[in-house]
Structures are given as structure tokens and as C-alpha cells.
Length: 320
Length: 320
Picture 1 (cartoon, rainbow over the protein chains, first blue to last red):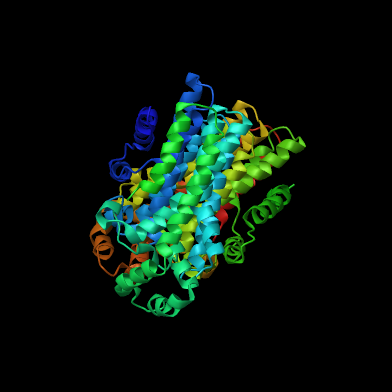
Picture 2: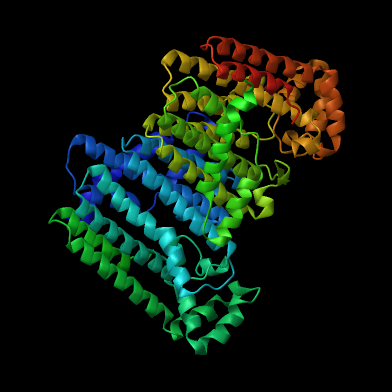
């Protein structure tokens, strides 16, 4: 039984609960909530909740709780995307105009808050306060990380700063998605820990791959422009690594510190290739996926274990 | 024992817990969180939580829970103010530059989210899932109301629309502050209902007075400009009432539909006076305060009952 056949029925229930929860009677507001549902997405976080939850008991109650938590997790993710697009002044998201473009920045602020509020209403239906607390902690950690990133925008960080930043932005959320699934399903502590570490490592790998795809992906498939992070003053691993290679630093800084960095994207990409920075980032991602697979191997024999292994490989293989 | 002597010790504990919860180690983020604490505020919502909670049992556990819930309620309020200032492009808040002005719009988006997240972490410490659920519902109702208001901006609403809007914006939050206090303290159902209705009525009165003060207050004491709602396309009760008086509508619409409405604020205020609109709004507020006092009279004899009665009178008397 493959990854998709295992999570697809659960993800369909997530999509149904998303639509049920966000649906609004006020026709003005319905236009916004319908638009939030339109973009779809990879549904990685709810898939992690659902897969982690396979290692618990399979009572109907717990299955329903798992879908509830998975849906709430996706809503948190949707809220952060809607707000991130305001912060990055993004035009596109998931291949369609960002909420802030389709409507306005004020509506996007409120739509994000609306998603957070609905997420916590769903979390409250989990009957487990530790789930609510961890979910709030995830949002808290992401916000603190993003505030720090935003206030240091345009400053070129160290590689240690980079790892701290992606831990706050993605690592903790993916690790917590796995943990929330395990909590909702009541898995034993050893399994919960292995799932949490698995989520932690794929989270770091996922973000490194994301940062690589910002340079390598087909812009149409990605749904946004190449070099987009750099264009808004965010320095990711390839740039940080290339600068640390002495011979490329001077030429790179000349482009990076220019007022018209967007015009030099092709030159910058050439230096990233030449310095081996793209290969370095790739190897880092592969290393974290190996560590994730090692954690998956600690899990009990179960179709969900194979699915998590497949998911880890998929994170390296994806091109959008 | 007066209103302030009764709630002051609790509000001091709220301020301490606010500071403890928001304090950040990262020095960049600390600059933002310290600023969030700087502005202070009337602390109306936590005062309602604390006063409502006086009607329950007074165990140490419940007192601590009450302070936790009161603090979380104030954080929700702070989050909505930070985000509202982005939406209204406000320069000032509580007499100092708005977060979006002191920092940037992106930081204000994240700071609001950070406050929401911290609020729900605190709510999760209440050990009562119904409290988490109601708190999330409050945010949800406010967002839906604000999205509807934002998308109908510049359209002149009916008086019925106005009451619906302030119910979503303020009525439900103040009513829920009372209910959350009653829940946290475990008051009996009849007391909880009277407190909830009391909160509902003072909420409506409070917002009407707020909308009146937008025309009548000393701008320095209020901490923001006169006619500010109208300047951002929000039509409040005085405007809606004045337009409903046939003889003023044509002249008023001439100003309202102008591209330079801000230049006509003095003319508009003259029409609000002449049409009796300011007096009408005042009488509406007085009517709701009477209804709140009627609910307070149903409560058991207790110093907190006198304090709630004093608070209701204060809402009519305030000039900022």
C-alpha cells in the first residue's frame, strides 16, 4: 500500500472539514473563505498528522480526532501563508493570485486571523489540552522566528543563523505535526519520540529543498518567481555557503548589496553553481533525509512506516 | 469598596503575567514585545473577567486561573488593535505611535499573530476546553465582522447593519469576557447568564460611546484624530442616524461622497449636532447601560456587583 492510497481518504476528510468549517453565510465573507479553499496545496502537514496517527489505536473516536487535528494544522499553515504573502509582498501563491492581491492587504490580515481562530476552535474539539498548547506553541515559535528574520532583513546571516531560522519556520511545525498526530491517536511515548524526530529532520530537509527550488524550479510549476527569497532580502543556505567560499564573496556581494539585485539573478545563480553551493545544500538535505529514515526505521512495522519512508524520499525528489 | 480597589490587585497580576509571557530572549524580538507592553490601556476586558470571577468560589487555584484567563483576554484584544491599525493605516494608538509606525506593517502582522499565539498558550493553561473554544469563537466572530465591514467599506450601512457590526466587533467580546470569568471561577448557570447579558449590553453601549467620542473627544486625550472612522470609510451610528433624517441627507451625502471628506469634518460635525444624531446615539448608549444595570441587579449581593454597576456608569462618563 503506497503513500497516497494510505493518506488519500484521510486528506479527503480534511478537505471536507476545511470547507465545512470555513463556510460563511455572509456573502461578502463567503467570497473570501471560498477563495481560501481554492488554492489547494500539498497538504504535507495534515498528511504527517494522519500518518503519525496510524501508530495509535484505531477507534472511531480517535480517527475523527485525528482528522480534526489534521484539518486544524492545515488551517494554521494556510494562515501563515496568507500573512507571509503580505510580509513578502507576494503576488502569487500556489499558482493563483495571493489573497492580498485578489482582495487587499487588510482583508488578508483578517483572513489569516480568521484561519487561526477557526484552527483553535477545531483544536478545542480534540478534548486534549496538551494538543491546544502545542499548537499555540508552534504559532508562537514561527512568529518569533519570522519577527527576528524580518528585523534582520538585508543582513547576511551565518549558516548557524540559517539553521536556527528554518528550525523555527519549518522544523518545529513539521515535527509538531507528527507529534500532534501521535498525541491525538494516543501512541506510546517511544513511538511518539521517533515520529517527532522524523518530523524534525524532514522539516529541515524540506526547507532546504524549498530554498534550493527557489533557484532551480520551473517558475510556472512553483507558482512564484525564481530568486524570490533574495529579492525580499532573505539569504538562504546557497547564498550563505557561496559567500563562505572566499573566492566568490567579493563578486557575490557586489550583486547582493546592489539596489537592483533582481537584475543580477542570472549572475548570482551562475556563482551559486560555480561555488558548489547548490550541491552543498542538496547534500545537507540528503543528510537530514537519511536521519529521518533512520528514525522511521525505529517505528513498528506498519504500512504507515513505509508511507513515511516514501514521503521522506519524495521530499528530495519534488520539483515544485 | 470601589471598582478600582476591587480590580486593581488582579490587574497588577495581569500586567505581571503579560510581561512574563511576552518577554523574549532574542534582543530584536524583545524590542517588539517590550513595545507591545508600553502602551498600557484601559484593561476593560480583563477587569470584566476578574469581576465576573468574583461570583465563583475563591480557591487559590481558581484565582490563578482567573488571572491567566484575564491576561489571555487582554492579549487577544492587543492583537486585534495591532492588526486593526494596519487595516485602518492608523498612525497612533493609546497615545504612542502604532506598532506598524514604530516598526513596519510586516512586523505588526507578525506581532499580532504572536499575541494571538501567546493568548492561546495561556488559555490552554485554564484546564477547561470550553474556555479555549469560546475564546477562539470570539476571535472568529470579530474577524468575520471585520471582513464584512472591510469589504463593504465606503457603503453607507443601515442602522440594523450598524448594530450587527458592533455586536460582532465589541458586544460579543465583552459578553464573552464576563462569561469566561464566570466559567473560570465556576459560577452557577443563572449567575453566568446574568453576567453574560450584562457584558453584552455594556459592550454595545461601550462601542456607541466609542463612536461618539470619535466626534466629541479631545484628540490628545483619545490618542487619535477626530472623525477617524469616517476618514477610513466606516459609517457609525451618528452618521447613519443623521442621514435617516430627510432634511440633512442631501448636504451630508455631498460631504460623505466627496474625495476629500477629511476637509469637511467640521461641516459634518455641525450637521450631526443639528440633526440630533449625537443626542440620539447618547440615548441609545444610556438605554443599553440601563439594561446592563438591570442584569447586574439580578446578581447576588457582593462588592463585585457594586463594582460592575460603577463600571457601567463609568462607560457613559468616560471622555477618552
